[in-house]
Length: 245
Length: 245
Image 1 (cartoon, rainbow over the protein chains, first blue to last red):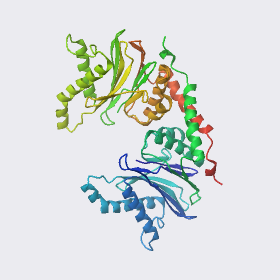
Image 2 (cartoon, each protein chain N blue to C red; image 1 turned 135 degrees about the horizontal axis):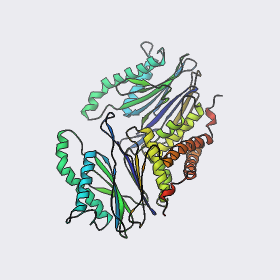
Image 3 (cartoon, one colour; image 1 turned 60 degrees about the vertical axis):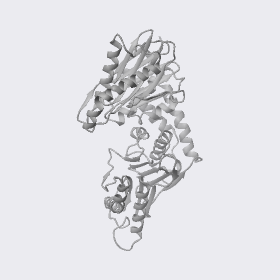
Image 4 (cartoon, rainbow over the protein chains, first blue to last red; image 1 turned 180 degrees about the horizontal axis):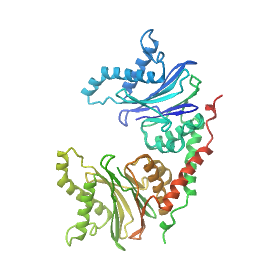
C-alpha cells in the first residue's frame, strides 16, 4: 500500500509520501513515490503515485522522456497547470493502451492514482488528483488537500487543522502527524518518507527531505503527539454517569 | 454504513453503535444496531451488527425467539460466553441457509459482521467478533477491542488510549471520540448513538443511553476534543527548516 498527501495553501504546497510497496505481506520493498519536474524560476511540478508500481514507473519514465525530447508536448512545454495535469492524464492513458490488456489477461486491475501539483509562471499554485482513467479533479479552497492510497487513518487530523491559510511549515507538521497515524495502523505504509515543499512564486522546490527512523523532528512529532493526545484525553471529563455506583 | 466498537476491560465492557443505515446516499434511515439479552444477576449479553440490515434483523429475531422457546438451545441456556458466541454463529448460519441463495440471485453478498460480548455467571466478561460465515475470534489482552463497519477513521485514538486497565468511563469517553472522528469523515455513520456499559460481575446492563445532537456530554466531547487537538497541534514546534528563508 501507499499513503501520499498533497496540500495546497495560499503560501505554497506540501507533498508527503511514504516509500513502502508490497506484493502481499511477504514481499515488501522501498520505492520512492514522488517525482519532481522543475525548471527553477520558470516552473515546478511534483507528482506522487499510488497503486501498481509498474504503472507509475512507466508513467514517470514516459513523462521524463517527453521533457527531454526536442519536439512534442511535455511538462516543460505546458502553458499552465491544467494543461500539465491533462498531459499527465494523457500519458497515463498511453500506459493504459500499452499495458491494460496484458494485465487483464492476468486478472490484474489497472490501478493507479496520482496527486499532481505545482506552479507555472505567474499562475497561482494548483493541485490535482488524477485517476486511473486519466481524468482529474482540482483542489478548491473548500478542500485544500488530496490523499491517495491508505487515506482514512490520517484524514481526521487534516480535516481538523488544515485550511488554505495554514502556513507551509504547519501543513508539513500536520501531514507528518497524519502519516504517523497511518503508519501506526497500516503495516504496509512505512519509512522512509519524502517530504517536499514549494513556496508560492518560488518556482522551485523549497525543501526536500528524506525522513528515516532517526530523523529528529519526526521522532519528536511521533513522541510528543502521542503524549499530547493522551494528555488531552485525560483532561476531558469522564462521563460520570458511567462510574460504578 | 455503520460504525460499532466493543471494548473489553478488566473493569467491564463498553459498547457503542451508531444508528444510520443506507441503501445508497439517497435512502438513509435510523435503525438501532445494538441488542441486549439479559437475565439480571445471571447473565448479560450485547450484540452489535454491521452489514445487511435484513440479515441482522433476521438473526436478532431468531435469537430472541429461541430465548422465548421452552426447549432447545438459546442465549439463555448457554453455559458460557464461548457457547453463546457459537450459538450466535450457528443462528447466523441458519439465516444464511434460508436467505443466501436468494440474495445471490440478485447479486447481493451475504454481508454481516457482529461484535458480541457479555458475562455469564462467574466467568469473566468475554468479547467476540463474529464473521458472516458464523466463525469468530475472541479479544485478548493485546487487542482489547473490536470494531465493525467503518473502522479506520476511529482506530488511531483507540490504539493510543485503550488498554485492559482503562476504566469503563474512560473507555466510553474514548469510544465517543472514536465515533466523533468517524461521523465527521463518513456521512453514512450518524446519530443517534447507543452507548452501553457493563461492569464486571454486575451481570446486568449498568448504563444504556441514547445520544442525540442535544446530548450535553457528547456535545462537550466534540467541541473540546477538537479544541484540544488544535491546541496540541499548535503547541508542537513547527519544522523550522521549512519556513521561507
